Image 1 (cartoon, rainbow, N blue to C red):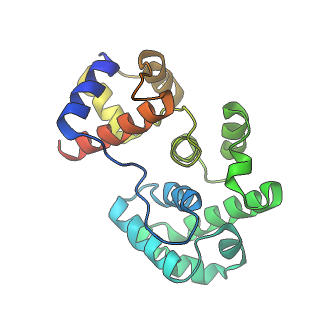
Image 2: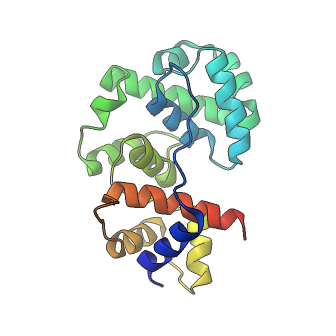
Length: 202
């Protein structure tokens, strides 16, 4: 399996995917990406879009708004994303941490080294490796490759089976090289989006 070659083939076939998809408005798009990454766990993106639209409509798309919102109101807004009680708790924990440590400012958080920021995210309840890496890559612009179910399916197609998430992540990161057009972060961003596009058409 040659990841760079597969990327080139998928990019030629599908083109730029414009990820991460965010809604237009006056809210913080970086925070919206983080919320979306948490809500998309174990559900389809269409369900997440409904939840995001409700949060925006109810002016709950900021760390302080989520932190102050009654839990029942938050749960009602994100019900479409499934596991809404757990996800509401995750959002509360994430925003409380962000406010306490970074005054609710994601840009301050993303100034830390990749290893430090990833470690902090993984230390939060309900934030796994895929969610943490999605936040770091798509909101923080950090060069880290996201592994999801579609990535594993692609690997299986080529007879590859990795023992864990990070082994698979390192496999891709070690074989993908940045170019003039794609920095490492942009390359990981685009490839992950293309893999999802590919996976949905299988």
